[in-house]
Length: 208
Image (cartoon, rainbow, N blue to C red; front, side, top):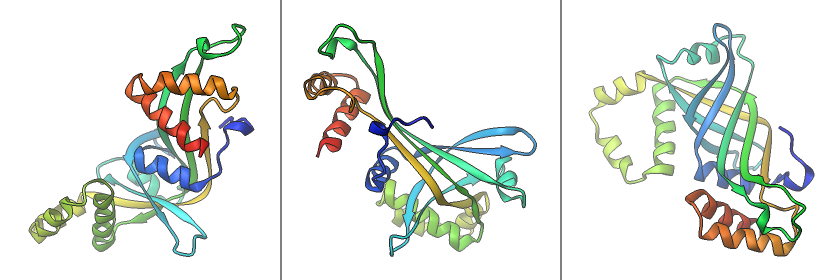
């Protein structure tokens, strides 16, 4: 991913914030049957207690043909992409009329090799971690479902983990503009669309 230096943000806390706020990722892999393929899948962050490594976790329907590709001995590196908010930026916010429009956005790309999690206990724990990030109150209902019904649901999915080998977080939020220009952009975005309001918040976080 082309990332000019001013938009390259190596801070893992920012990467985790993007994953937490926009967990629906695109899993990109090489399928031996269908070639380069992409699957949308919600994913969550995991990390070593020592802080020496981190990973992504998710699950697919067992019927999804990509499961076979991920499970094969020839399964190679996958790319996982998270997309944050994005919006048009008008040159009217700039100091000089000699300017052109652009687009501000956030995106995270993660590379790694998949580890399959197909034991029922592993998948149950994975689902509980996912539930904890999205709807903690549902955990009690999930635990109270009949064991045979839980077993049927767990059998219909395949969990997986992607230990992160490398990652790149691109945060393009007008860092290359003057402070006055950024303030005008933020002021406009705070009154704009939902994505523009989210970008204004990210700009505030970046300036801390």
